[in-house]
Image 1 (cartoon, rainbow, N blue to C red):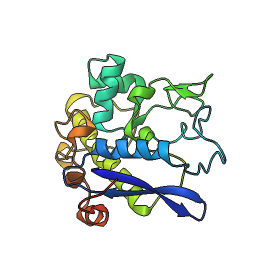
Image 2 (image 1 turned 45 degrees about the vertical axis):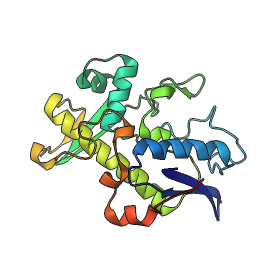
Image 3 (image 1 turned 180 degrees about the vertical axis):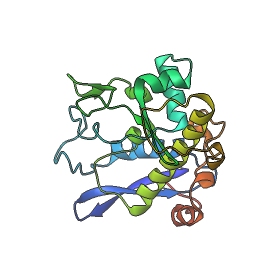
Image 4 (image 1 turned 90 degrees about the vertical axis):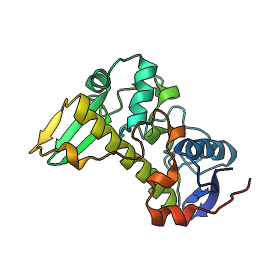
Length: 219
């Protein structure tokens, strides 16, 4: 097993821990291991104590949801949209503050995600939902788990910004914009069309990588 997500007891319930057992492990391996662990362990849902699943709960659908370059490619294929600009103009918000660019899923007037089915409280693009949604569960987790997730999100969004700079430039909100293309060099997401192509070792900070790499995780 290239990535292992296991259970750990915290003061507020059963939560997540992550280990990597192969240098070629990818972001997709991380997602698959997380999905498997979530089906296997009775993790504590701190927002829905005692609940067995997330159906009918939209507690996390009103939070900031950053997008990665791979997220946009997946959603563009799923929604049959031809260009990044076509996707961003309908389903994302681009905010520029000085040199910082933040590209997130759009939230409607009620403050909740554009893809949320308001009647059934389920995701309308569940099969193609972004990484931030696929990897968030309202349960405790080790600092390393959150750091891995954050690093993937940050590098993936950085690559999306680099793509945006060369193909769209559509902005919803701006404040003293000072964005320069040279400040957004290629990341390990460059040229990648799926999470199975993005290796964890290439995008995680060395200290974090060494803290989770175990050189042979077993089942």
